[in-house]
Length: 303
Image (cartoon, rainbow, N blue to C red; front, side, top):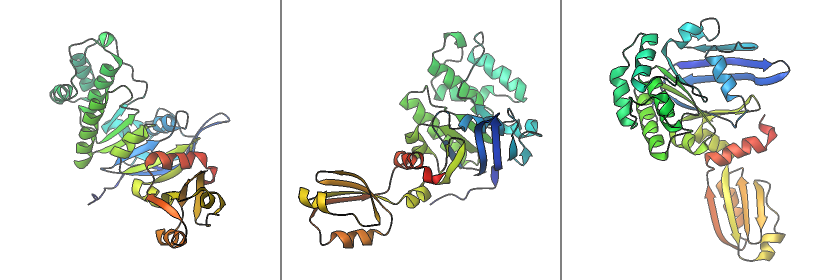
């Protein structure tokens, strides 16, 4: 049973940011509900980081509007950021400090005691807080960054490629923690190009391509829109090569005995069409996120 999501935490309306003539993001309209695990997808250079920097008030929008907790992200940036935990994709920490000193410094900046939960998170993520940042591996620094953004229990987490340096066990630990936070009403805005973990973790997904939002829905809704993935194995090569596909079957590959295609229509129509034809095997599934992502990027008709 799906949980009921709350009021919007992040809202944008025709949000645009250009760099001279170059487009960063263009006319993005989003609504991220409270308590959601929201995946923000796109390859490097698609505009994900630009969008996040505008939301955090680091960049002024060229046009449109963006609010977090009802505060304008540019004019009221300080209020908007007051209850956000942000992990950038290019995390940098002072080399001379250790984990405990970082928790004290960040706690002082936020006016909160972050030591108790910070120690608990360090134990959960298997990080020695006494090690200096200069002596940490990339994965250790990533763990410390996550601890620093989680330890004050922010109402909104904005994570830009948060698992890029974590091993699979640590990724699973982080996913479990984020699910628990969302279940408690916190909101997670998860920017990544790792499709498998977004599929495992997130309940809503937005896809950005060349600065333009091309999809914004639940994963189930995107799958329904994309139709079914069909694999047909024919009994002989003559049937496979000389049969014309029906209009509702978008043929992707046609190799000897096997067709792969996308079904745009009822399954019953396909079954009726195949009933009088010599097939050996049939598979009908919904597309996974990787396939959906490829469809949005390979077909410019979605823009």
